[in-house]
Image 1 (cartoon, rainbow, N blue to C red):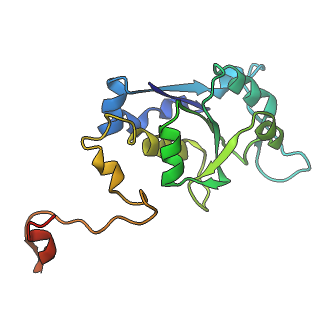
Image 2 (image 1 turned 90 degrees about the vertical axis):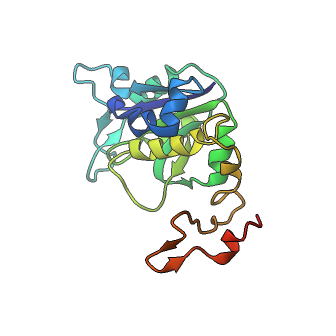
Image 3 (image 1 turned 30 degrees about the vertical axis):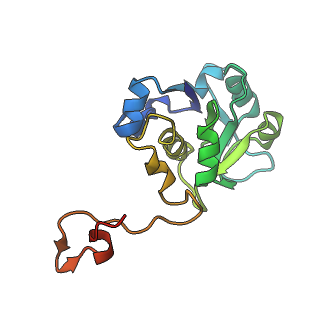
Amino acid sequence: MWRATVLTIFPEMFPGPLGASLAGTALAAGIWSLEARDIRAAATDRHRTVDDTPAGGGPGMVMKADVLAKALDAVPHDTRPRLLMSPRGRPLTQRRASELAYGKGVVVLCARFEGVDERLIAARGLEEVSLGDFVLSGGEIPALALLDACVRLLAGVMGKEASAVEESFADGLLEYPQYTRPPVFEGEAIPEVLTSGDH
């Protein structure tokens, strides 16, 4: 079984959309599992503090290395890659999603605020992953996207295994345009080559 562990201060955001459609059906069938862990459970003070002011000054707050380390270390140690959703990370590609899907699963850390204490990233060997050159409120939405990209590639999730082979980016290129009935829509017909019967 492919296993996903997500560390977040908003565990209620999971499974979210991953509980519906193909991913949700596969989750219910036991093809993959999802555990959302609350980072605040690793905090030691009565306010369950996970962040503090940036060293050297500046706006916002930074997630604390000691709390995050405790949260990560509480996840049973195995060979799953430990990922940090971060706009400065390596862009997620179809190839990387495929590599992750063919592994044992992932441990995903969802950052918030201004980010994570740099010392934690180095100390726990986190792989930073980005969805693109833009900033969101936190790592939860990117984590959902990453998990969806992986889960749909697991054996038994999609109806036809060929769907994953012939889609966009499978060979580094975008997928060809798609058409379906009706044969003519607002005066535009399906290209004749696609209605010839010669696959």
